[in-house]
Amino acid sequence: NAGVMQNPRHLVRRRGQEARLRCSPMKGHSHVYWYRQLPEEGLKFMVYLQKENIIDESGMPKERFSAEFPKEGPSILRIQQVVRGDSAAYFCASSARGIVTGNTIYFGEGSWLTVV
Amino acid sequence: DQQVKQNSPSLSVQEGRISILNCDYTNSMFDYFLWYKKYPAEGPTFLISISSIKDKNEDGRFTVFLNKSAKHLSLHIVPSQPGDSAVYFCAARVEYSGAGSYQLTFGKGTKLSVIP
Image (cartoon, rainbow over all chains, first blue to last red; front, side, top):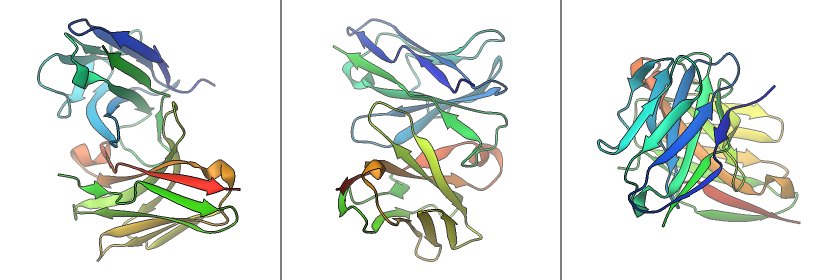
């Protein structure tokens, strides 16, 4: 009974490279959310996706960041031309419906991106 | 603009005593509040929640109190155990409609240390 799976857990990229973070939601969940946690900060909403659709990307930086959730396969958060300020923990969460209560949304263990 | 504030970055408590973690919010549209527990290098796990129509919710050693007029909530852990040592995040959700139904706003967290 796998939970939300994220990989890689740790990723090191040089400035200017691309970072791809993957998230497989819990079985039966078709709603995926990405949150970012900068050092010493709380988690901040980035984007909400359903299969093949971006529902809300209001928390995504306007440039260099993109997300997708294809019909087959995991959700991907893509960061192009990474900068040091992108260094953070990126958490994926999933739910069966697009309504969040405490016990309906589950977070993955996170992907830690370090930009050197 | 920090809509959910946890003003104590850290808290130390003796084992067996009560831990009280506080959270203030500014957005009067928040109607549902959650507490998450997070260990290092792991994702947040749901602890307890409360709807704005209630002022108290209890689950075992964990009780959350909500003072809507003061826009304040607190998490009480009694008795505190060494395994409770973690970072605790307060989160809030806007009214059950549109973006409010799926987007969580987090505080910066309070690191609880329970001393044996």
